Length: 318
Image 1 (tube, rainbow, N blue to C red):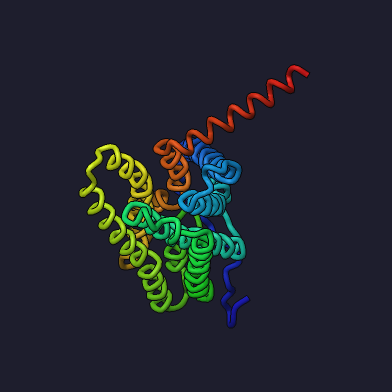
Image 2 (cartoon, rainbow, N blue to C red):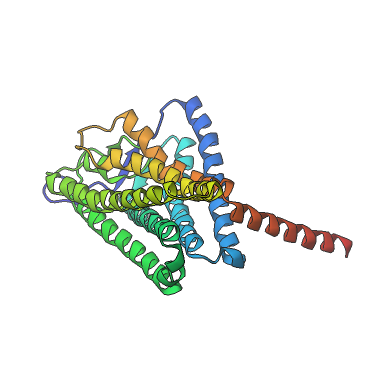
């Protein structure tokens, strides 16, 4: 309860992506498939890297962390979306909204750091191949992964604190499909300047700083590749780095559009569509991009399928 005659909001109403019942059914089917592919693909990546010794390398260690972050990312948003597509009353409690914001920010900000770390790993592998094993040791990889999660936790703490500590009284309708800080701040019953500046500054640190590292890394990689004599070597590098660069462009491009521009008073349909890319689509696309363009992952998957077929065939003969 709030002071005076005002009451603090205990739940929010989410408008979602559409109010048309037929469109909502269609969206339910689409996002159900997306979520299934996301969960299945990321779990397969994690399992393959865990059980196949050939994938026990720094690149796949970071990819495993990225897949886990993607699982948390999509699971914090999509299941509730699916329920709301089939519900007339699309509500979420203030506590539920707070949990969603924390998990979403933790996973999302950590993914920003991990993508930067993965670009550094590719830089060392391509530009300093003779020193790769001495630079990217198991200890260093663990430290980089821990720093990525700590940086994600720090950014999450700042953003969620500034967003959730502002009083919300009166209007409780969020023109969005989940509790995202920029959308939630539009309903605050107090001045949001400090919160908006905090989100912007954290965005500079967690979005633009990693992007700068990625640009420097790939600038050096491209310079090294151009000097390569072997055409086969150049193709191999471009194939490996191309997967990572595709993910970076999709994720950072949509994320920067959402968080690195002036906060408007209303959430437009374009804003919601753009947020679908970094909050839902990338979690599905990451395992697809990394597996389709990666011979090691496809080889490990084929080996696992063959092993399962052998076990199933042996069980059938008993």
